[in-house]
View 1 (cartoon, rainbow, N blue to C red):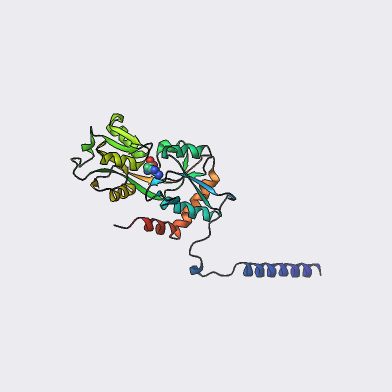
View 2: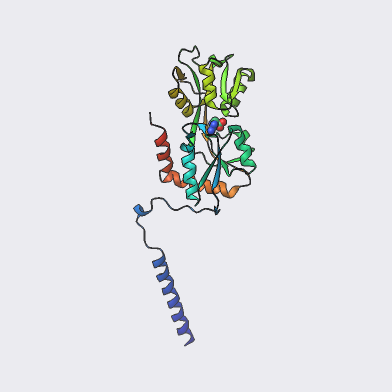
Amino acid sequence: MKKVLLFMLAAVLVFSFTACTNTAEPAQSPEASPVAEATYTGTYTEPLKMGTNAAFPPYEYKEGEAFKGIDVEIATAIAEELGTTLEVVDMEFDAIITAVQQGEVNFGMAGMTVTDERKEQVDFTSSYATGVQVVIVSEDSAIATLDDLAGKKIGTQLGTTGDMYSKDDYGEENVTSYGKGADAVIALKGGDVDAVIIDNEPAKAFVAENEGLKILETEYAIEDYAIAVAKENTALLADINAALEKLTADGTIDAIVASYIKAE
Ligand code: ARG
């Protein structure tokens, strides 16, 4: 009698378990969810603050009071993924890493190149874009190669990789660092510098806005852009990486990039 009861009980349990799993997980067609939902470690009740320097089209720039650009849109999508909203905090480029370290912002995103030096100060997420340092000169310039830059006056944006590398390669005395890339371009047009070293996409935007300038064919450096997070903030780092993975897999990132950068 006891055995029979136990058997019946077991049967009931097995049955209810199967019934339960059947109703809880209806079969999904692959079309219904092409990308698995990502799971995130943190809960984000406040807006995520992004430290940036909004003078770097097409990655970040201002249109009136509104912040626009690839980074702003990717960060907005990440914040949405994490169940919150984005707040853009505009600052000097060379202030972003400190703002991240001190927790004034949750992350830094500014077409920021991953370098070993910066990796000592912050953690970087997976890379979401490639950047290339290029050289802008005036159309009639005698400068045609990187070697031609020797002894010439170079303009850069302060604290950027273009600024640091050109000081190393061509000597600090030959490099003038401006607060904004656009100011370096104004200096080039005014003849204060002979060349500007800056990332390729902003370079294209500046050349398109200003007559009489061109970009040299030779690339100066090829780099990876990533998002900077404070070293102790491993949960946010993991969550941004998971969100980036999802937004890459479902095509969101490509769509954002394509809306700003026309394929050549
Ligand atoms: N990729 C370069 C760097 O990380 C320049 C980035 C400048 N970004 C900006 N938003 N101003 O140094």
